Image (cartoon, rainbow, N blue to C red; front, side, top):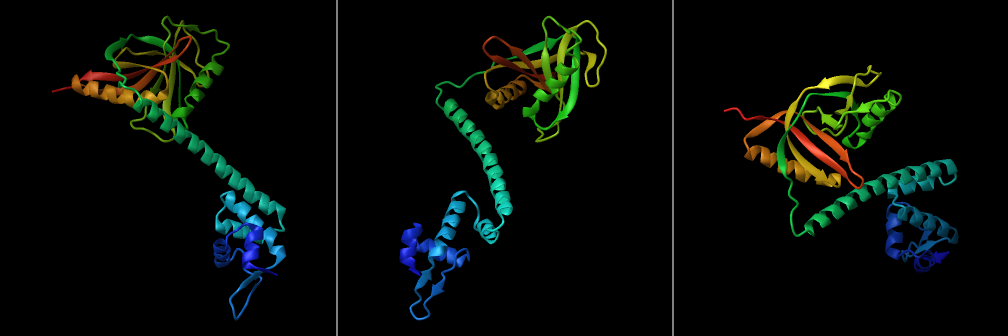
Length: 267
């Protein structure tokens, strides 16, 4: 038998934590002297405390550790616990990386001496013929799904791009959606083509809109939206229709144009 101090040294766990594990009924002393209150542990309890520490370091809760200790003779049950915890940590890692990117973006913007300005102008798109795919996607980040459908279903049709060719995505929801986002991909083309399972070829009406050009990352979108909203209010316009983006790709950067349908405010 080992005194609690000796057990503490051998297990490299403080006496305070050993008493805590006793309180939580994870590892109780093998014997407590009725007169002195001294706690004694058996040597074969050292592997048990080792497992408790290892599982705690993996981030398991005390309740989960207790369950795993009860199922110590069932490798499949233990493996199931480990797999669940791994999935939790992977999800946490993705979330942490996203937060780090947001912190880096904020740091970058705060470090700039000047605030980037976005020039907002009024433009008009003429009537145009386009291949269109409208569908609901899980989130805004899944926009590529719509383009994948458009490209795969027209791959053998030898579409002739219009000149200029506009590749746009329209957003039909009346609010920001966290899921089931209603979008339509549009690519202007020359000629006429038959519809496919998901692709519809149709004339798009002319539109007048406010336009601002964004060069670089999507992290700027909140800023450019704020700039456009301020410009629209200051110049006496109001929103009339859906917002949409037009994408232009150069040899070095992706340029996104943020467009919003407009009409003059009525008195």
